[in-house]
Length: 113
Image (cartoon, rainbow, N blue to C red):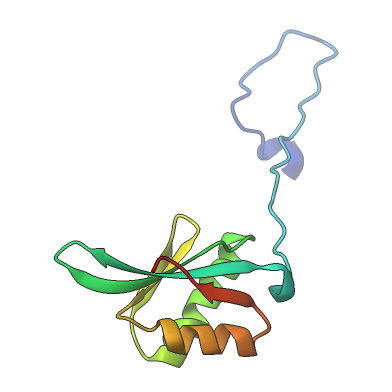
């Protein structure tokens, strides 16, 4: 049995002599370059009323979203995470994040009042 056949999922047995297993190709979303990203910075309150800065509008892979999140957390010196395609940064850091994103050539703007 070859390595390719070992990686088959959800196929136990087929009586069809012409059966050939086809891998499902995932539609991976390509990450847009920073100049084409339209990021919006919101100020939200979560849970017990704590302020967080939410960055939404990122188009790309989870790995790239996590890399951008890590970079922004380090530059601001605060905690945060990426969740459901959005970046959450602790505290009201909209001005600093806007400056960081624009110097990194991202199209970003404040939103939500």
